[in-house]
Length: 487
Image (cartoon, rainbow, N blue to C red):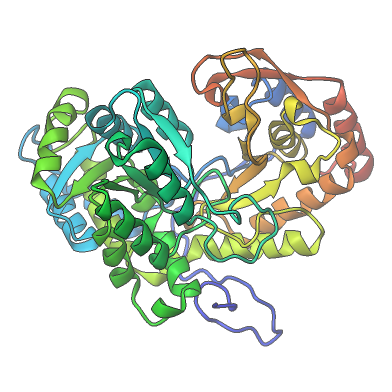
């Protein structure tokens, strides 16, 4: 594995520090507000970081979805957009890029990844069927269940271990896949789904060898293989770094091989190409025709799919940039740097470092906060209060309630600190780590949360919570005692 940052650059000191192979030419001003104003902001937002106003945020590490920095070539390409409602030349550029990068024949544009999930779920899921996968994503699960399906997570035993050296915690457990087929019958399986760099369990990748085994078993039983390629570039990077067979293989060839296994590929371009939008791809004309009418019904005409043609132009460029090692490796390198530094400080983090972000184990960080009081949500709120940095809860708040109204406790309680591509500097990363170290030293001050306004669907987006005690005020008092007037 490359231990010299994102590009093999060695430091005389022996330190492993990621070096950006890009320069910053356009900047956006940031503001770090006083802690009393941050406390007021999180209170008004119902202790839900999704409800914060960006004017109150210093470093926005909520997500990498639509927040990646576009390249100069992407921005300039937007000026060439063809605004035609039908037959736009911008679409054909995007289509050509997808054929080149993914090796696909048919492309259906959609406005974002969850729109693709809607089309795929409505087309291929019948009531009562099951969908086995390496791990669910929140919107994926909702779409599949709304259409009568049942998600079955058949991850490996390593997947939920916080501290692990397993290189591919996103793998599907083949034995469990066989058991699903034996239990439900192949005719009752809508499809098997693999998510590149599993979002909810720490951005963990799967291997090519695992894809081979899944594909072989799926083909033997006539089961369709669906690939969520939103973070496929990072997954390909980890394969090159961690799978011996592919250490000398290009990212382009690894990407094409991954896509060759799938019958249907869908993606959020908010991630894979650093733009907004999404798409569904296949080499099977029959499958494409089954989905096509829903694209026209829900998304728009076939050559824009609900997207701005300017975004489509930038997507075409961004897809090609995904093949550039220096582009695709930058975010994982920063994440690994953060994970390694926090681990050395005794802060519980998901290991090995994955894609998308640095994931803090909230149960390990706040062992005194019961899971029913949402420790990951409390940790996200506490970090914002003491730093102005916005992360995302990926735990029980992101889960659902059962038919009796009880929380279905999440498998893991994570605070995700996203690292969008080419956005944060090393000093900003070190600021976040410094505040996390202080918070860990004062973790006994952080308490739990409770819902005061709870939507029935995707509650983590719009829900409002309140602290179970006056712990936020105590945390602020300790911060002021230690830092004085410093922000």
